Image 1 (cartoon, rainbow, N blue to C red):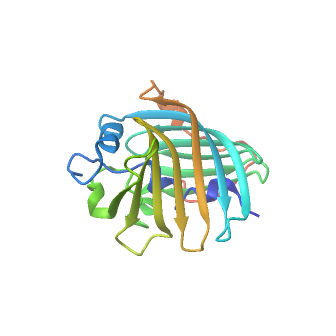
Image 2 (image 1 turned 90 degrees about the vertical axis):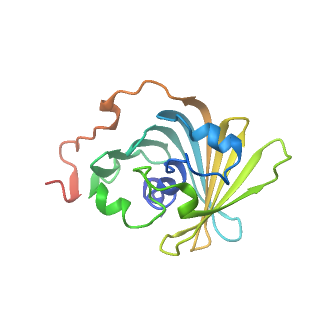
Length: 211
């Protein structure tokens, strides 16, 4: 059974929280415009997972918040209530149905693959081979291929409409594809630090290092 939040560890982190791009000359201008000056964002999301034969494996919806660098929160509402929260020090994953919290130190998670670049210190072109696809179409499309083979992610597609990021599609080495589609997208909204603070609920089983 696919639990939506667990899919984000290798897919979402490498796709949404991209590094600083001040020196990423190969990037199309709309990508540069989007990430330059990006501090916070929030949106509703629809997440679809398919296998190598394009058969649906899992569908989920919810809301997400991001505060760069290093903080984000994804609240899954359908079909399972789950949270994935990075507070700048730890990564928390909470499954409400299972009453279980998994916690990892951010430094350990973020160094497990070069694609997880929450700190924004590495230029994007150092991590990915970048190719612009369909540049004349109504929807701009950029393909990112990790230069290292240490990541489970093999290809990441970013889709833009104007200066708005509308979709992210991530392919993994198991042959699955995870697509995130965004609506109600807000760029640089004011976000309180409390949004990214997680306190394990009373009675929940906590697995991991919280010292």
